[in-house]
Image (cartoon, rainbow, N blue to C red; front, side, top):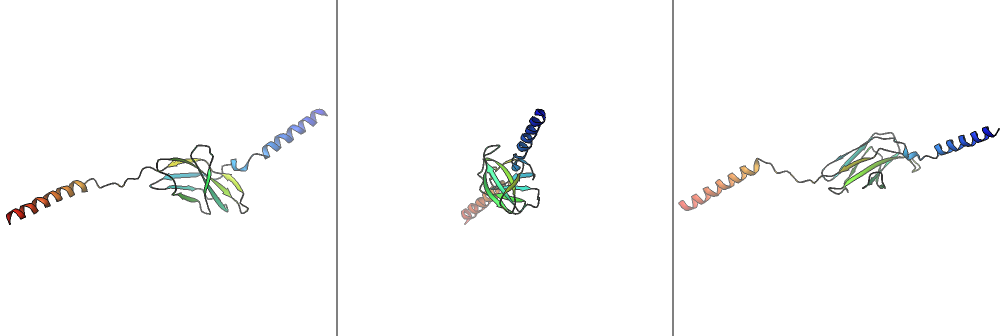
Length: 143
């Protein structure tokens, strides 16, 4: 009889421990990120959730700070700082405001965005400018 009592207690403890695992530990959406010029674009699988809360941190594994809440399956982080690596997660939300589950963590950063100058245009412009100056000087000397 004691064996059944201990078994019941152990089974109850195992079931309660299993039920107490936070739901946010379940990966429900697949998150992807693309670092662009002046923004990080995040997108994820649409699961039909009421809304999605977007979180960002500077350390892998968190802590994260909520930076937005959207009803679509994408978000543009335009407040990201160039050269900083960020770690993002997205959490599904329901109509009561509860978060149901969390995406995978993804890292992204914004590279330094320097406008590219056309490589051929610069030498051509220098040559044209030089020839123009030579012709102008030649005309003024002839007159």
